Length: 128
Image 1 (cartoon, rainbow, N blue to C red):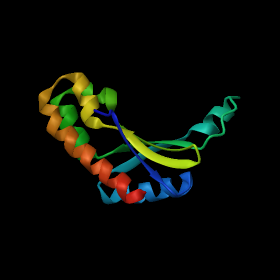
Image 2 (cartoon, rainbow, N blue to C red):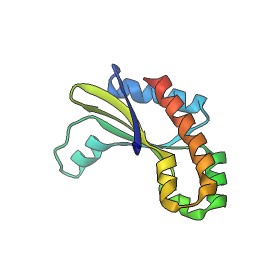
Image 3 (cartoon, one colour):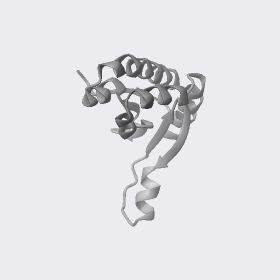
Image 4 (cartoon, rainbow, N blue to C red):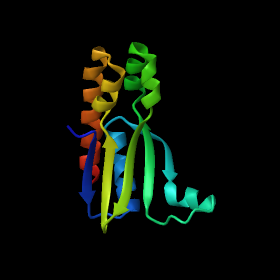
């Protein structure tokens, strides 16, 4: 079983991020923060030029549900979605919330995680 979900797109990283921001909003997720990884590394003197973005996303209602059920879930929040370029392709992906919740070992979280995962996968598929 894969721990992540990933798709390829013909869009540039910037185009994919823009499309993803729209599709996340439609699917009730907001982008809390976005990291332009090469820019940050270059700012620190590290030569890394591969386009790579990390978006931290959240659905506040779902976050409240899982944190109320088990505060350890906070170790995995907010959810991360990445957009990057490799081998001439642009990829959009995320670690699967269902797999992350398995680490905690709380079966009551499974259904919530699966719902969040389905919504995020839908948003990714709509953005590609």
